[in-house]
Image (tube, rainbow, N blue to C red; front, side):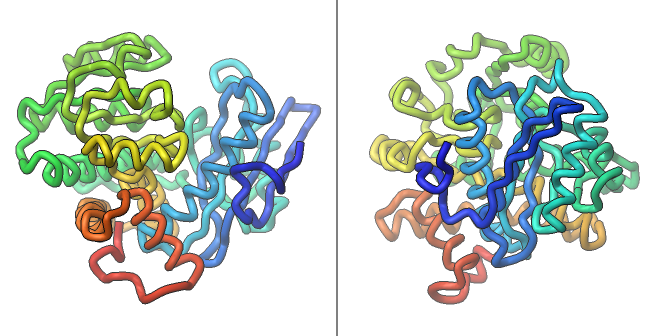
Length: 362
């Protein structure tokens, strides 16, 4: 398998294949860019059908983290790791410790945190072998109560803020009462996003490949559950992808009836061509790595001294960043995805003018 000629290889600094026969660990760590700082990104565990699928995912995800940190105004680079395996069946503490040893081998160039298929306990197991982890320290909520190091609440809140900005831009309203939203995936982030939306008066339809997670949303939030494939066909205002990437593609794009796409998933578009098609159909797309930056912002504050006031202000700045992207994309006649990429690249490549102060914080 050639990495250098892979279509998703984007001048990555390092791609490391990790194997531990004793624990069954098979993993890949990708460091995309460290110009702004160490590469911070989640450790995902997923039962990839093939090794090629895992390589593609880690290359795309690590690149996205570089852009995410740059747009969020953080002194961090982009990296990601994936473990090949079913987190519900194949995960063990020993396997996660072995993954920690693999991360330690990069000497701090890559810092791991939670992602799909991993949680605080897993990262703590990794921390027995390396100091290069994040998302494990307990944090204080605005009301003074403690919560775990899980960055999911911040990701969900930032996504909610960004979704409101997109609705305001496309539909001209700040009132979410009666807003029709389809959420694809109600795991750690998607469920919390659903809670924010129902509290704001929105009407929700949800789906998840794990039926127990969809049932929880129905029972606790009073939403409507639909089959996974049916989520694309709903007559809604907003489609919120909060599962794995690539769900907006040649097969699904023309089925969408929403006029706003705003969700927490990474790599929502299978290709940039789909951003152009969305724009042609007057569907407003909130670039994924901008709207879902809450988690890495939360981890940044964990690493630099956790203060809820500045953190909350930074998260709410995601809406301001998106407003600026929406405006400048219209003015430039390009897609929101292209405009976001342009700003991010000016920052982590050190090209172009100084970043506009209005988009200095995501």
